[in-house]
Length: 187
Length: 311
Picture 1 (cartoon, chains in turn blue, yellow):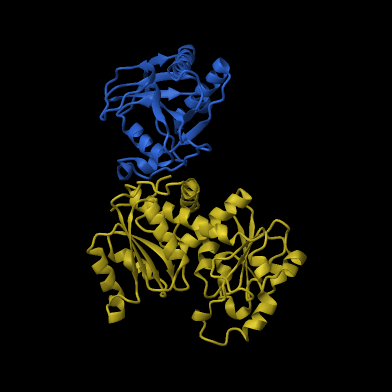
Picture 2: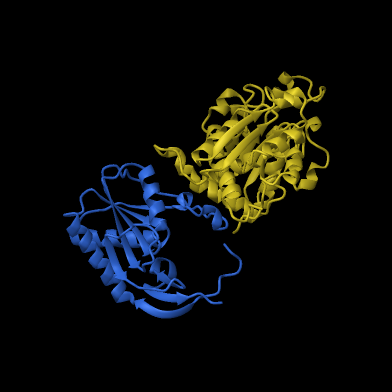
């Protein structure tokens, strides 16, 4: 919506290429099935935006491996942020979870796990929607620097980073490619 | 799109992008109404004061519910039973409320410009919930949200606003907003209830209901505001209803089969709308009310939750 597109940040290193990206998701899908002894009563809830894409891919993989259909929902945690009024205009795109999470094992899916504050907000948002039996956390990249006691159950890749760097997960659904890169903001 | 305003006073001030941001935000917030636990923590610790100098059920309740669903503390102040009844001036009352550090004050007043006066004097955000015959921006926003959900878009749609245009802040806010979003607007009513120079707002004027409702996508019927009329503007309610009341027969004969019938409420049944039309399949009157809560949540979130909006 912004009239001037932000300057493209400088790419520093590639972390995952398309094959490694897909392999990481395949492994996570297998781990989810193994840990939960199948995919019964499982539900995915992705965090906007790329967490939702990853959740959909995981659901496809599980359908292929196990034959089960795992529902996928979308969570917008803007209304639960602890820094709402420090972030400029809140962009609210809505939560869409068209199934009951009551009694389900919900796997929360995000692309990059960093401070843990987003996940903290997501846990509150999720519990306001019903009482799941269990909540697990899956992330494609864990880049460390946690500020809260939060630990993922499934990790695509652990990636030690400096706080000045940022990790960009690019996905075909939005960016035309499946790749993870470390970028450094210009200026 | 960034929200940069401290206050929401008129639709006239806003540009199409700002209106779209408000409508989009409201659309995303609508699902909260269908939750089992209708509360999100977005405005925890914020205080919203409803400062109402005019009667209101729908709008005040709607702002109150919106604030509460967002976890703000909402305080209602109505002119009757308050210090205003003891002779305190409008600005003194407002200054006293400001001394209690609210984040948003929602004002309804019978004088045009009342909310703007407060916005200039107070540091907190002001929302105009209706100022005399001037504007009622949140009503226009909920009308727009309803229209977009039913029709999918705004550009090119035709609307007829029918009835007491002269006294209607709803009409003014809608005319400004609809024009900015690319809609065509016709206002219709007896000549005594059509303000002079209304054409300067970019609308067509019609003095026959049958002509005004032909081929339009939206018919917005207005309430005959008997409390604002100083007399002599219409011969009788019966005559008004005969020429300007929307009935099923008139709809069937002149309107499109997919037309939306809207009304800002409260409805004078049997005057501007026949009960069969008000409760009929074209009517979206109660959906407008539901959407009102989402729109007011959006306004409160953008005003009290944006960094830029806090001076």
